[in-house]
Length: 192
Image (cartoon, rainbow, N blue to C red; front, side, top):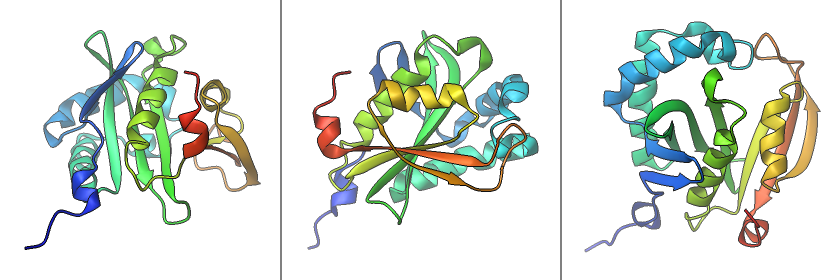
């Protein structure tokens, strides 16, 4: 009889909380909620998120189905961000072959920015990511022009490891990608 693999055993929590942010795993049944949240946030998202230009009900449904598939496969873990029960954004981590870790992405609906929710959500997500035994680092990438996204890895003690010119992917981007990394050893010594 073959036993379970380490990936079958080690999974992040489906729901977690840190500070004012609660994370809940996205499910396929959440497609309408994703559509509504993105629709209400389009003016805020389009400048920075290339996928927002193609926003549709079908895209929302495909997103939530892909979230379930990736979770099961262990390739990505994507969460709804909630605050006091209200759906306020999304965050997730995805595995990359280039690093021995995962890359974090996140966004909030405009009325909820500037309250520490994104920082709390990324902290919760980072804790869950390092609960996976094979993860040695977590990275955050953002365009240099996106100053709010820069503040989050700075607050959480990520180290800036790279700045690289590239092609802008969204209208507000300048095409300079900044990479931040938090290794397992630094995570274990964190003060947040």
